[in-house]
Length: 250
Image 1 (tube, rainbow, N blue to C red):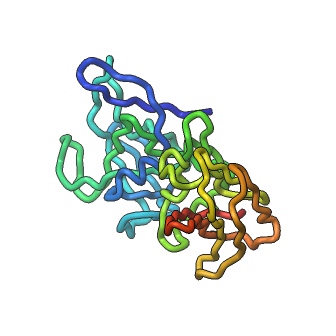
Image 2 (image 1 turned 45 degrees about the vertical axis):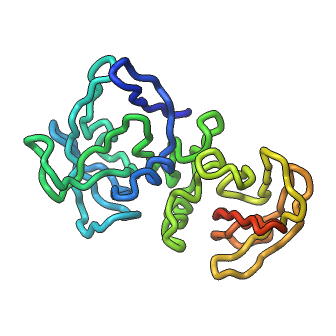
Image 3 (image 1 turned 90 degrees about the vertical axis):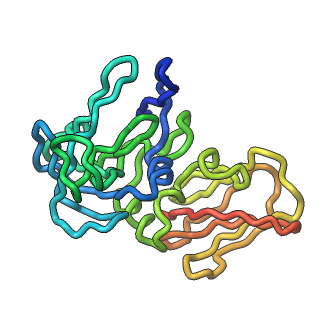
């Protein structure tokens, strides 16, 4: 199911447009990204036992996420932190640290529910899977991956969630491809392909795992024999053109 969020279009009204969690984390580089299990919900916020700190400087075992300020979009939308989930729900959330009081209940150094106007700010962890609108185009969203693989994508090289952005979110210079990959990596160029382009897969330490000439607008690479982990997909051309993105092999 594609999650939807609201996009502000000015005082005249609002429209519902989805934007992925990965796009959100990319657009909010100063916000923390933390996974945890909700252990308490009250009228002013929620308490979260930390599972992993994916981004940010946080050493506490339990953190507080306070309610934000309700906003109007053809009606009042609640910014209650309880909207992130109930007791025993596990979530991954991108959220700002409170550095300036906005409401009477705010506590400096705690967190505030992230403003979700036009963006997905949290996804669930369910039975070992990260579930939600993680990345990709809204019409073909990438919605489920093992939580361990999600964490590995953040930890390996410190590159973060932006490497799972779709071709539409990242660049028109790279082929479209699924991410992560089980066995077969299918690459599709949406535009014309210039001559002399080479496709390479590199390991995280820079070793070349494979290389091939680009032929046609669609090609597939068999990764079934590759060890699980992160690879760098690199496209180069005779004219000096170079583009790259990371691919997770499960």
